[in-house]
Length: 236
Image (cartoon, rainbow, N blue to C red; front, side, top):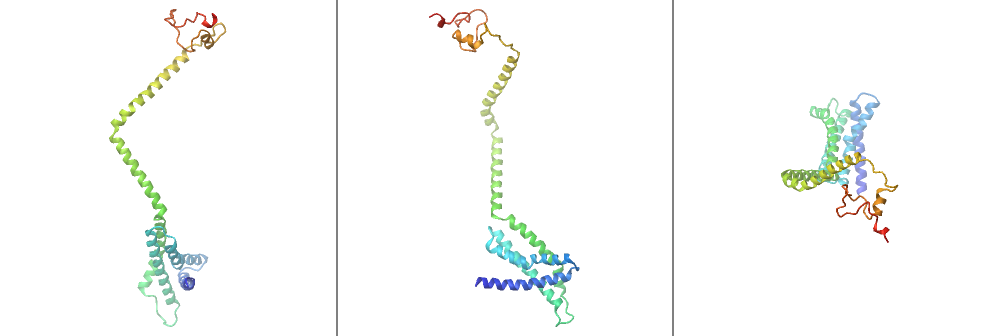
């Protein structure tokens, strides 16, 4: 039964669409452009009516989308009705001399372009109130508020934060400064030539001293291994 009703509605829409097209083509200058303009106008009347009605039934995700689609269905219906009545008046022959009433003429003059603009605004409103769009906006707004609140709390607790960060900042600065000093010192220190053809690591290994351990430079061993003393491993 539903398909019968749909078919019936399509037949009526085709008839009123032809009336609207005939009225629009009679008001426009002759030419191919006028033909296309008359066809495009149907998307603000019969075609728009069918489209918005279908959207209101099966393609809405929010209450705002339902309201705008239902409202535009009836707006387009009013445009189709007014254009059809005007075409009937212009084409009728049984009431000779009857013209379009002034109120209807003014509505057609200003209302029909207005209906086109309302449909465009309706499309923008429909998409801006889509559920996915609203959820995305809500997530971004929540993230913004949380970030703003966190920054405000950080600003109110600058002293405590500075106290907690002071030690870490000091350690980083000390490492950075000592590293720069060490690199500068090492660049100015000449390389120590090998002793008896042996590197420093080999020489220290032979005297049981770890490589890189500081050595006395005043001739006194101060309890440290003497670099001139042979290793105990050589006195077996």
